[in-house]
View (cartoon, rainbow, N blue to C red):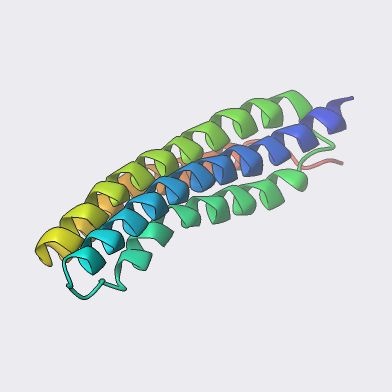
Length: 150
């Protein structure tokens, strides 16, 4: 049973991280499509760089995957701690992706309308990304405190 809970925690970490990435990229993609439509309607060139903004929240899935693989190596020794770590780390990383996507959606609209500020937009997205990186690093530190199976 303990091993099952550990595996569930690892899968939850990836799943919640990926769900946040899906919501975040979805929000940003919808805004990019709307921004391109406005550009086409105004006979302005549609900025291809908006795809970079759309893709920003996808990296949180990678953080969840990294943690999942690390957690799977500990499932025989710590089921409940891994379940708790997986759920809370995955949730925090996923929320980072969700809110990064919402910010990227606003950045898509602003970039398409003004053609200015791209560096500022990516900088703001990077700050939101930092939350996910911190969660990943601190979770790895916590995983280091869990002994490997004998």
